[in-house]
Image (tube, rainbow, N blue to C red; front, side, top):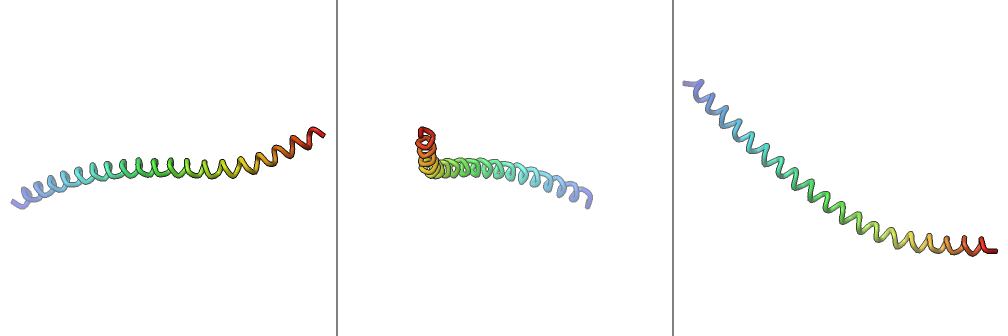
Length: 71
């Protein structure tokens, strides 16, 4: 009788483990997508901030170099 209950317990355990694995995979996938979207948004914000700073500094140096080259 004990072996029957042990087999039933093992089957229930394996079913619950399979369901938990599927849920973990779904949560992991959703988390990965959300992190990718967040990184994409942060990259866009940083590129805009960085491009404004770079445009000011490189534009100023570029004009000086061109002006110096014409003399």
